Amino acid sequence: MAVLSIAVPNKGRLSRKAINILNAIGFGIPEDPGRTLVMDIGKGRYKVLFARADDIPEFVENQVVDVGITGLDLVREDGRKVDKLQDLGFGRCRLVIAVSEDSPVDGVEKIPEGSRIATSFPNITRSYFKKMGKKVDIIPMTGATEIAPNIGVAEFITDLTETGSTLKMNRLKEIGTILESQAVLIANRSSLKEKAEQIEEIQSAVESVLNAKRKRYLMANVPKTGLEELQQLLPGISGPTVMNIIGREDVVAVHAVADEDEVNGIITILKSIGASGILVLPIERLIP
Image 1: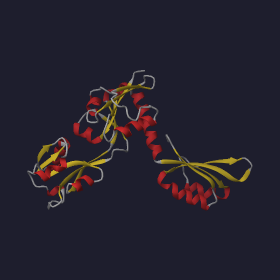
Image 2 (image 1 turned 60 degrees about the vertical axis):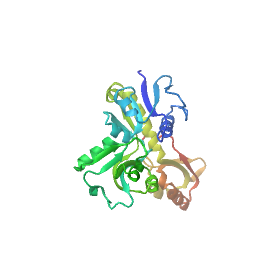
Image 3 (image 1 turned 90 degrees about the vertical axis):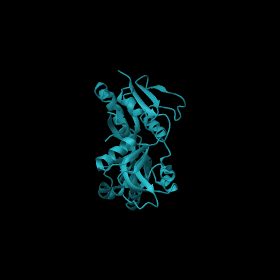
Image 4 (image 1 turned 180 degrees about the vertical axis):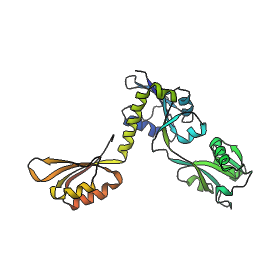
């Protein structure tokens, strides 16, 4: 079987969680790979390449690697011809348009024609304003975009933000969102045909980990008199599993999968119907 190559960020906000998600499906990558550039995994079945997140879309498009983990913002900015396989749920941020707090402009539609917009994402920003039919002057910057309005480089900026705190520190206000981004799993289009089974295996494994993160496994000893109410409460995957307990005619063991944010309420109701021995466990992987 051919080796499947996977690129992950070697540093930055996506690196640790990208490694964690691969480790959750059995890769065994050190949390800090140091200066390692390439690592063989799974007795030679996989090859992991540690690269700059910005370079990963290019590497995937040119089939330097078959699949990669990087930010959707970087994929869109590069405009690379790759296929997005999976949203990964971490590294969430927004590419926003911002202006000085004291500016009268409070919406993107009010940005004057010919305004200067500083950005580290010139392609996404240019495309956005082109679709709006608004002519602006794009000023590419490689970093510290938020300083541009304060030093007269531009009147507006587009920049990535998670909480908006950095913008506020620099006395800027958001007036619009261009793109909502997060980490994504992407694939080379030729590899999707040549290594379809291997890529499907990785995608399915990653999806099972993501499914499990939002769920919890519940176990409890429940009086038989409360089963009807419990079946409405705990649908699980296809209904709760009910098992007899040796030596008990009045109580059964119930196992079910529940959404993480519903667990506390479920425990309260379990107690109200006389359940005991309640256990809540994390799930490593969940395949519906």
